[in-house]
Image (cartoon, rainbow, N blue to C red; front, side, top):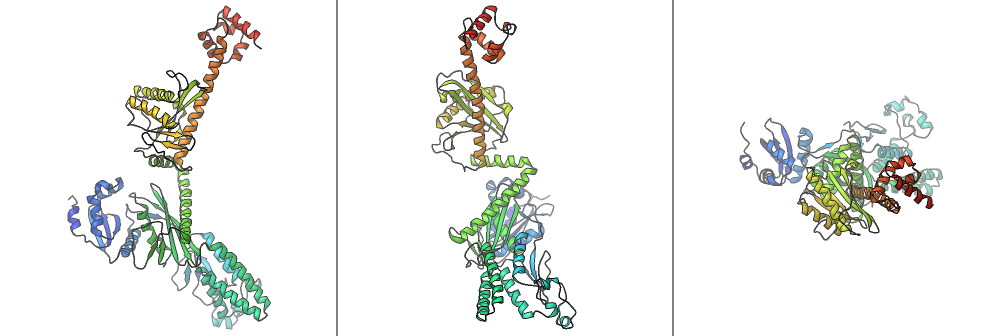
Length: 600
């Protein structure tokens, strides 16, 4: 097989906007991309290989042929790329995950048109509104329309001839006031069409237009002293006012605008779309994208926007986005708002994207718990500026009582979860008095000296419960062992949850709700719990040992034997002579009996 010569292929590619296609050795289309300058964009794959991520390098190695299509403008390239991706679905392109058939509201192309929801888009001259990503939103609109305007729901052929011949009779819908009986000629086409005009305006988000029209009719009815009709109009106005108060999110001057936002992680992205007409959100949808080549948010958004606009038949000339997406078009305006109502719309869109992301990831993680572990570890690696995933983390804490009975503890987390069988505690051997720094130095040195001697693996991350002083003491031990470059070590200060790095005078502050901080806090709290439990036990034993050593004839060795055998002074007091003989001599037993007889 002839090796692909990218230099020769680049000679044929012009400096023009267009779409490029990559093919593999089997003739399969594996990637489609757009560019405002085809030559520069395609050459970047082959010239700047050191800047490419791993997935993109795999793609480049598989390229065996390049084809391209020149277009007039960058926006044409944008739209062509989207249509080609939908048609061919190349392996390395991002695909919008969406297999739903969305509902529409249709005004049928017929005499006395019916208005009803449908999932079938038929090109028969009928007028379709939507699609609606939320079935609840669609039903809310339909309920409002039915309450405001009496319309027929039957599928009778209401031709002029059939009505004049009296072929039909009014049904129950007429009797209860839901229909005005056009089947028997009780309602004219003009009156029916007036209702339809109001319905079209409501479906287009022009609620203010309908309200003004109804107010004019109300004034006319009052002027003619037609109070019954005026009451009906007033009820409709109240209903529309309630519906508008729920629907309007910004000033009605913001009309025919598309809003897009994105929330992403390492493997997924979620793009939210809002359609705003006259201050009313009339359509909304969130789509999921699976990343293929570690695409940026700007690249993903530029792929999603034309697809979603095509799906919802949007003709908006203004698109609100959170950042520049690299698309320029004469007939489209991209707005990046910083303040005001458009910014509020963008924030609302982002809230929807983040909520959808959380819900979907929670579903994935319930089915595949290992996904949550990978996500948390990846986020910790990013937040703590590490080169590797912190799969093995250890945390140290010291405990003492007024400088006495100092102990240290280390807890171990593996895959962000406690590994209790690996917990260890230390009785301090080389430190006299309340010296927390020296105690930390000893514990860290003893811990990793043993791991090195036994050939065990070192943790990727060490957390020290304390500020700069404790961190410096721990680092001193790591340097002495020659492993300070092999692990990441940080200190966490309790007061403000500050994270300290060696040699950095400024602490790192993580979001209080971040999962990285929650894992570190869990480590710190677990180390404190484990350490304080061991400390209390040691303090109790030493207190009891001191009390036993006050008995004449009982020395340190005998006291330790008693505590080891009976566990507490109370059990020693209650033990029989035969039990004590297993530990003490007859003379010592008499001394113990005599001591406890004088101690109340």
